[in-house]
Amino acid sequence: MPKIVIVDTDFENNDFEVRMAKDAGVDIALFNEREPEAIIRNAADADGVVTSYGKFPPKVFEALPNLRVVSRTGIGYDDIDVPAATKRRRKKMKKIKWLAIIVAACALALCLVGCSGSSQDAQQQEAKDNGLSAAKTTDGIIEDIQNDFKTTKEGILSEESKAKEAAGDSFDSYVAGKAAITDWYASTQDASGKLFERTNQNAVSYYKLVAAQGKSKDYSELKNEMTKFYRAVYEDEMTDFYRGIYQDAMSDMYDTYYAGVLQSSSGKVAYKTLSDECTEFYRAYSDAQSDLYRSYSDAQSDLYRDYSDVLSAFYNKEYDVDKTLGNK
Image 1 (cartoon, rainbow, N blue to C red):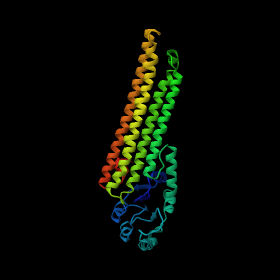
Image 2 (cartoon, rainbow, N blue to C red):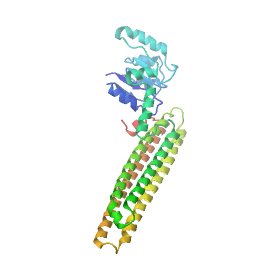
Image 3 (cartoon, helix red, strand yellow):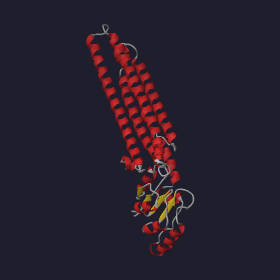
């Protein structure tokens, strides 16, 4: 099976290229190290290499006997020793018909895994289709996350209004329309869970953008970028969601029906009938509240753990976010 190694990249992620390579029966590995020694180590068994800023002096070509193609995701060959590559090609061509070295990103990507430009477009479209951020800047990702929280909260509150309208403001209307309330609990849990999942994925995209700056910025600058995310998302958005949905919206439903409509029906409705309705409401409310808190708490813990792990990795000059987080 032929193998491609992406030795370094300045793209947000390479998921699209990885999927295309695997679908085509091509092995692929990703790294983010640009120095010759690292390239030699990481691409030891590569047939093709993709690079953004990797350095390819003669010793790289001498140390990689399987290498047939080098493709750069940019313009020019300043970091690639073309004479050494050409000499290598001429020596090997007669015996094993090695391919000429192609120094163009689209050539290798189109032939083996898809061009990098198309990849980025596809990644962005896929992100949008899944409700994820397609922004190419850290500020852009934060803004998309903030908008996602805002839209999700507005949607939950809108559904709450519809549920209350269906349940009405009397005992009889509540009994007839109470299913709308339990449906709202379920839809709130679903919307919240999906929001937290998107936030986690967007956080990883954010960390990768910061990691891409690792070679050009010192740790204090990277830490500032990470702190910006922490304050905007972990402290502000997560906290506002907790207050707006878990505390305010859930409490509003409780106050409206358990402490309101049901309690005010005491003496007007048969005791057992009212007691059964109160018990049913409280059980459903308590379960929904517990489920929502658990989902929120887990998401908050995951977000903090990933943030902390990535920040520690940056301190140690480790910029492979997927490796740090254990992602495949």
